[in-house]
Length: 175
Image (cartoon, rainbow, N blue to C red; front, top):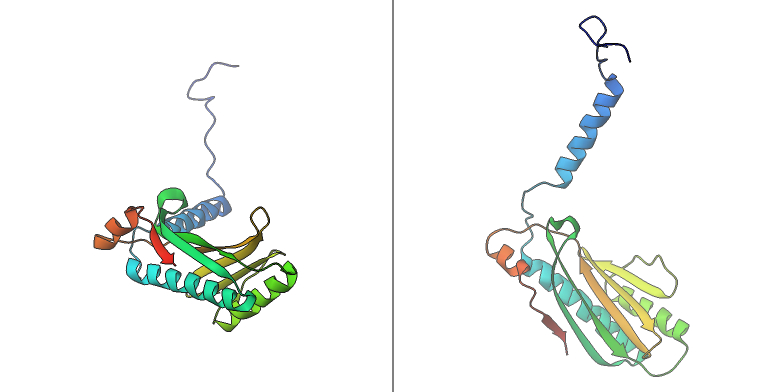
């Protein structure tokens, strides 16, 4: 390597405009996704929407397949990356023996009739949405039960809502 002096030091080349533009757009996207602002939706509203959605999906499903022994609960969790909180939980229901494919179709029809939108993307599951809440339903072979999960999207909360969502207290939805 030749000795470095004022005449041999290479001059830095400016970044091309396209690279600077890409960097600026990436930074703007990241900052908008990580905004420290608060959502207008209260923790009570989010929790009530999720509890109602899970309860409605489970009771509609139980009516459709003569399900019994409905149990469900949920709690608050921190969202991935630590930005915001989501309310998540699940439930279980037993049903009489029968063709599980027919039962799944009956459950899907009942849940959609209860005001949900079909969001199913995987065979053997029902995934439905209502009021920013996802409810997923599937049959579990080991114990022969139907399982339900409920999940809200991530919201950011302040004030008394922040203390509430930081608690990991379990909330019984059913029975």
